[in-house]
Length: 136
Picture: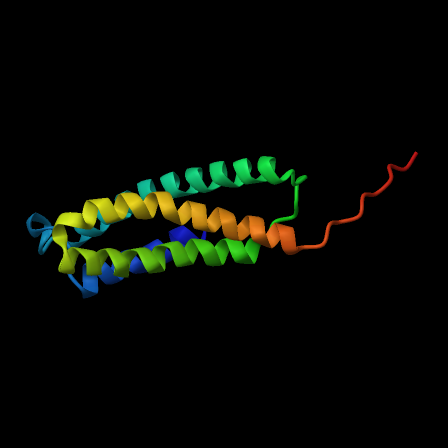
């Protein structure tokens, strides 16, 4: 949820304020916003799928049993993924345009790993909930 809310704001800033669009979409801001939003949806789904996969692998490796998740941390991580991605990508495109695709690929692979590690560390630090005996 955090990824989608941050992407909406970031897309609006990129298109309507910074005019950071392809040359063929210059002046057609609504179409540029739609294209960028669809790109972010694909990015969000790939990132979320990788995050869930890495978290599942971590839960199996560390033998965690259905821990309670910190929803505030998950929301904050989703926002952070987008708020870090756009300025970093913009800087890479301005400094070294030839490496922008490599940066995006690395970011798509690295950000879910960092988020999954953060969630797994949070689960480790939480006290285990006592098991309740079934009532007869």
